[in-house]
Image 1 (cartoon, helix red, strand yellow):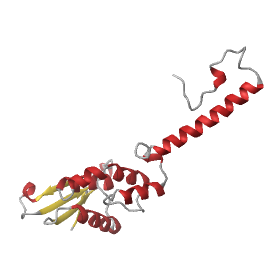
Image 2 (cartoon, helix red, strand yellow; image 1 turned 120 degrees about the vertical axis):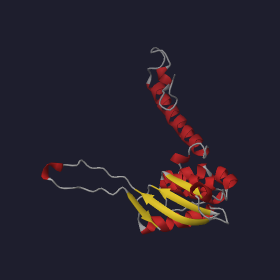
Image 3 (cartoon, one colour; image 1 turned 90 degrees about the vertical axis):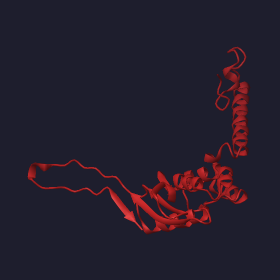
Image 4 (cartoon, helix red, strand yellow; image 1 turned 90 degrees about the horizontal axis):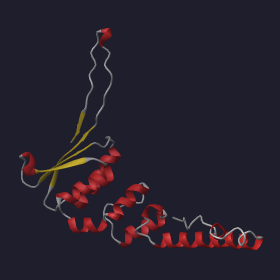
Length: 185
């Protein structure tokens, strides 16, 4: 199949016709025009090509669609993911599934437990994430989750866990302890 972006008209013409300087110049001009048209067409298909859009376009789309949890300071990949999920999140607003989706898209792997999952008080929620712990991340985490959680729900606990492994060398007779869980309340 011919690649329209890179093809030259002289590629499809027989050598006896497409060898003149005028034909070659026309073929290069035609390719430049086609490349420009393809570029414009791709930028016009905004939602299909979110990953190639400028940050200004992403910020505008997020404002237009009232994208929840969106912040200008997020990285481009996260912005694209948030914009792509906007309609679905509007449908899920106020549910535990919305919290799960938010945490997954912004912070990576995480689990949300409702009160009946762990035998807690009614309307309590526990969140467990593998996001490395810093004060800034927890503040952002709290701000975003409070905007999506059900109104009557209360966040009882946010737990961050991390995994570590090391090769243990007992030849010197020592003992090595590796902590694999950290709780932040």
